[in-house]
Structures are given as structure tokens and as C-alpha cells.
Length: 85
Image 1 (cartoon, rainbow, N blue to C red):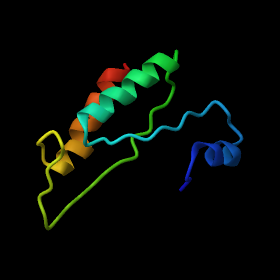
Image 2 (image 1 turned 90 degrees about the horizontal axis):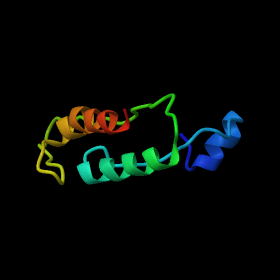
Image 3 (image 1 turned 60 degrees about the vertical axis):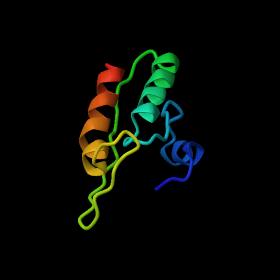
């Protein structure tokens, strides 16, 4: 786990890596992230979806009113991919 992009780039030796954080349970966060990436990057070679939640004992609701597990694990990644292609 890396605390910041600089540490990740130093460890890998690849200065072309872009590291950004977003909240995959929030459609606003996803749209803003995609807007920034689409503006800054001409070509996206790899997108790593590294998020996931699984709440067994409580039903959590996202800021968009969706069940949190579905928002984070399905709807969020789908929207993000759609906005980036």
C-alpha cells in the first residue's frame, strides 16, 4: 500500500503512472474523476479497479441512495469505465 503517488512512482521507477483517488460509491466523485482524467490524459492504457465493499450485518446506503455494496462494486466501476471509453 502506498500513501501517495510519489512513493508509488519511486518504488516502481515509472514516472508515467497516474495515481488518483475517488469514491466509487459517489456518482459525483466518479464524474469529476473522469472529467479530470479525460482532460489530462490523451490515452488510457490501463485502469485498475481496486475498490470493493461487502457489508454483511448492516445495509449501508450511498450518497446517491443506492445500496453501498452495489454502488461501489458494480454501478460505480461501470459508470467510470463508461465515462473513460
